[in-house]
Length: 319
Image (tube, rainbow, N blue to C red; front, side):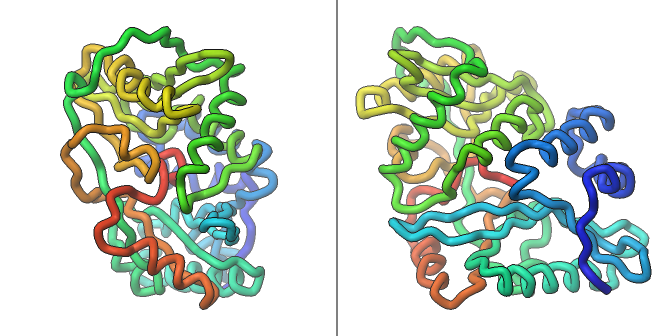
């Protein structure tokens, strides 16, 4: 058995027909293929994303998507390898192929100098725990939209020209956080591609809003899902303390006539902007990490400290 990179075209032909029922969501199969290829061909995809397969005598046994990110812990930077879309065809399951594949990939990541591995588990976190991954706080919020203040704002739809401002605002917010995933220009190209495709949600309409004052002053990314009577917030940011006061009203504007605002529990620096709300554990997209070097362990210990009131990352970092 050996690991081998799968070209985007071969992945689309050999794997996507099998995984569409799991991950295509509201997209047609043609859209699912086109958007997967678009990510692979994006600046981020060309540099930091690969599709990998476990092969034996030319037969594809299992596959996964490989993402490279950097994690910041204070002034320290750590290379992190992400695993997504781990898949074994139904007829080959129960033979340990996925375990072998991931173990081989983790050994290679250690040899390549990565310090952390991470993934978001939708089912069977215990499978990944057996490989050495550890689950970290992964929570969701729900609050009534009318619990947020109504404030007169000049709100606009986020346009392509606003993304540079969103990036700048995000970086300002990051100064308030002790740790998180860093975002380069190529990472932002990946986030923008996924936002355009609406690939993270199985229903709803992308509703990304900004307040502009000499550029982007505050922003919110998310999806309106009328059938759930909810606005699902993926991320928000603000330029300064005055802009922070506009975020709750911006969220209420995004919700419009929908009753609830839901989403992942925001990270530190953003969680504090929301009023008291319902917070529960997520059953899916559970963040799991493992150290690939011993000196990364203190960071993970700190990340899982009891009493943390915020989660580690935004839903926009999901893979």
